[in-house]
Length: 104
Image 1 (cartoon, rainbow, N blue to C red):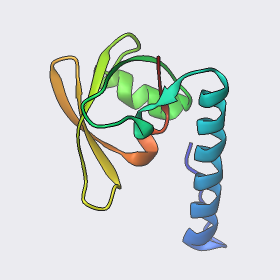
Image 2 (spheres, one colour; image 1 turned 90 degrees about the vertical axis):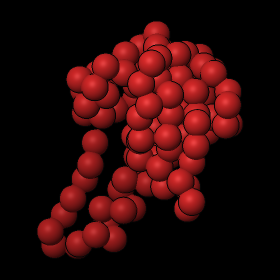
Image 3 (cartoon, rainbow, N blue to C red; image 1 turned 90 degrees about the horizontal axis):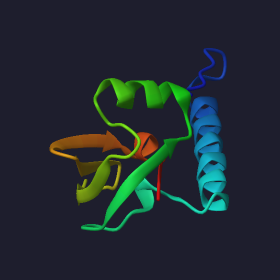
């Protein structure tokens, strides 16, 4: 979920988005799962669920379904994005999108 306010600009948008991601990561850790953004390079896991329904809709439409095997292939230079192998596809995901994928 992306929040935006024309009045307060991008700073407020950034604060809300970071808070939202922090809450999602805490919820995933309480459920015993890890999020894709925290996965080490070369480690294979299985997608359990999504924490954000909007991003889940985008990922499901791309064929990234719960039960799919995922592996981190590469990270960007500044860590903003992740290059992952999901089943037989290679996909580039933003860190915010990867933080919404809970693994088991």
